[in-house]
Length: 403
Image 1 (cartoon, rainbow, N blue to C red):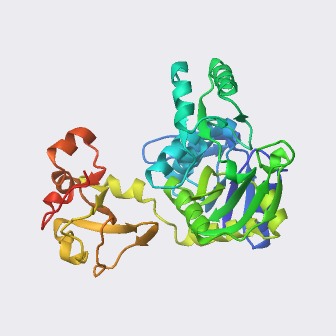
Image 2: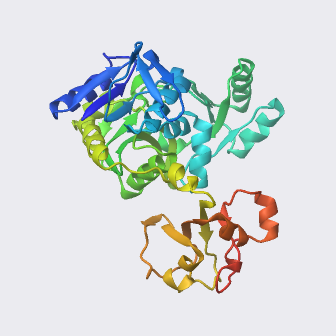
């Protein structure tokens, strides 16, 4: 395998370890400065130039895109994707994770535990927003801060108001977030590769510092994660469209509270604390994907004219309860069930004999015209043209809607 590692720093620990791990496994690996690329676009032939020369062929790309070059960096990654080169993290996934507001919006939709968060622009909305997240103390975050930079703790409402006013005057977008006191200056970093957590550490803030980032002086120790934390970390990366990520979680009284998903997680802290070859796990995953790459459903399925992805929710009282997927006649309606969500359980490609229960949610792929016809007029007007959920009242057999 010929691997390109996109990084601006050849001397950074993570870059060195990834290159070293690739070479030790018999692969060819080169570190390419992301800003040295030129993107050429022509009908049918997307191309890349590196240092004024046409880029040679690469089998895979591992992006290490810093926050300061997100726009250009993701444009380079996207060009590799258009050239059919496997990218460990897609441009779409990097953009989703880089913006804290966007990532939390997406994760909250999928029932992932997150600290209560609010985003406001008008100064008159600040006080009510602080009240809604539970009052002071609150955590104030810059939307695109990294490594603990731009994360502030306000002990009082007055202090929070002053900080937010100052940041907004500098045209900074900020989030107001509930302070999870029970975490006590600790958090969990789970390192996800593909569909596995390959390493995990608990970071503890030192002294008066509440941020536990290793870059802020936090101490790290290996930790065996409860299955709930493992599955939460894996789901977050999948939902945001990432394959390699660091998922930061607080240990809340109601289970994991996801703070952030990092698309370019550092290796030094987690390898040093756990003694594990995390870089090697990343390289092994990429090598396996080169021969048999996963397809991004969101980018591929919806390009077929008239077809798309939507969800079917089964509430209490649905006539589908107790029926198998096969008995619902969805297939005859040209609707295929891709995944069944049952509570916190995810069942991919469910068997047609699987019996449906109240609260089940089916991720379906099929004809949009058919699925739109299943949504009553009232819901259609409220949700506009894009199909988000399917009303089951007009499916074969009939049932009640989610409401």
